[in-house]
Structure formats: C-alpha cells, structure tokens
Image (cartoon, rainbow, N blue to C red; front, side, top):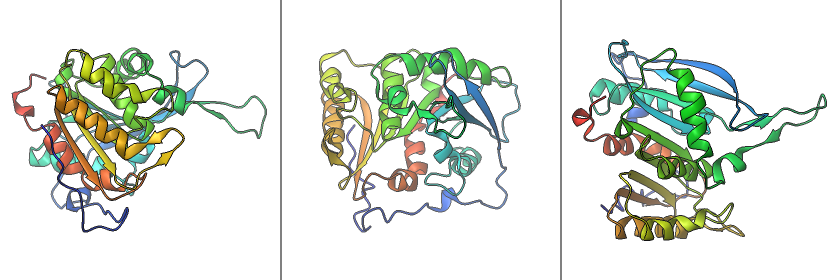
Amino acid sequence: MAFLGWTGSSFAQDDYQPGPDAERKEGVPQGKVTQSTWESQIFPGTVRDYWVYVPAQYDGSKPAAVMVFFDGGGFVNEKGHSRVPIVFDNLIHAGDMPVTIGVFINPGVVPPEKEGAEPRKNRSFEYDTLSDQNARFLLEEILPEVAKSYQLTENPDARAVCGNSSGGIAAFTVAWERPDAFRKVVSHIGSFTNIRGGYVYEALIRKEDPKPLRVFLQDGANDLDNLHGNWPLANKQMAAALEFSGYDYKFVLGTGGHSGRHGGAILPDTLRWLWRDWRELKL
C-alpha cells in the first residue's frame, strides 16, 4: 500500500515541529521510565544504557505489546525529536495503540583500557551489519531481562522495532531476519546504502517470498548523498520493492535532511497507522 502523503511541503528543510500529541495533556496518565546498563554477550565487551517505559495502564494482568527503539536515548528524551513517552501516553490513553512497553536501547561502546581515553563506538557494526546478531541480542538478552519484571507479548504482530538512520536499517534487519518475533518496522532516514551492504535489501525484497511485515519508511528529499550512496534514492527503491512484492507499507518523503525532526513530527500518525488493527491482535 503506497503512501506519499504527510510530506510537509510547506515546511522549509527540517523545519518540522512536534505536534499536540507530543505535548503533555491534562488528564492523561503518565507512564514510568527507568534507566539501566547492560553488558552484552552477543556483542562481547560492550556496555550500553537502555530505558524501559511502562504505561500507566499496564497492570500485569496480561501481556503488553512491545516496541523497541534503537539509538534509544534520542527517542526516550521528552524534549527530543520524537518524545516517545509522551506520544505513547497520549495514544494509549486515546485507544489509538495498545498498552505497549517501550524499550529504548543505545548502541554499545567498548570501554577504554586507559583512563581518560575515549570508548570505542560499536554502533555501525551493530546496526549496519546484515545478520541476525541484533535480533538475537534482543531475543536472547534484552527482552528476557525486561520480561523478568513485566509480561511481554510473544505475538510477533504485537512487537515493533524503530530506528533512525543506521538504526532504521537495523530495525528492518531485525524483522527481516526474525519475522517470527517482530513484524512491525518504523525506519526514519534509513541507511539502506552501502555502509555495510544494506543496498541489497531492495533486490532481496523483490526476489524472496514476501515476509509478513508491516513497514513504515520516512526520508527527506535533502537527505545524504555521499560515498555510501544516496539516501532518498535508496529509500525510494526500498518503497518500490515493497510495492512490487505486495508488502503492507507506507513511504513518506518530506523536505528535510538527515535529521530525526520529520520522523518525530509525524510519529503519532505513524503509530496510528502501524497499530491500526491492534484490537484484533491476541496479546
């Protein structure tokens, strides 16, 4: 299902602002966010911060839907580009999405061996690599840890993954590799280019049997054009491949550059589309 609306054509480049659903509203219950640190075995030697958002409506009587955000620190920030805890509060309260536990994960870093040195960033390896490593990281490490405290759904149609840039292709890779575990994807300014071979997805989508995924793509007409590729062209090719293969998808092309502002500004409507049939799901 193609979709080229929400372009924000009246906006100057990156002049996107959060809407009313990203603002606190009187009478809307507020969820709780807790922060933790994780040392990974899937990505040996790395440590990272992660946050868990639990909506006020969660009471532990039944499993909750799950949505994972890569580069989670940017998404969980209530003054950032997406303000996800506020948006979740408003949309869950309005019945536009299910009771959903949000898991916000930063990419790993390898701590320096010498005092005062900079840690080694592991982001590109984790996010841009085309493999099942990130899916296994979620399924074998992070989600089981969160599930010690909260009931999480096992229904893949009620589990979503989101990210910006390299986090966008990482979100797609998780669902592509493990559609038995994740079937909803939100990719903003996704790096479907040749950083670590991500340009092959548009060909794979065309040649392989369709997977049961729902995919939302966003990019800006003024996004990057460099040695790795052209981001707007790569996302257009992804959208064309999804269309060709009959996927349930939307593609929104705005006017911005390599920024989270546009994706954040339209996130409430994105989530309404992503979860539009949530009442039919068995959690």
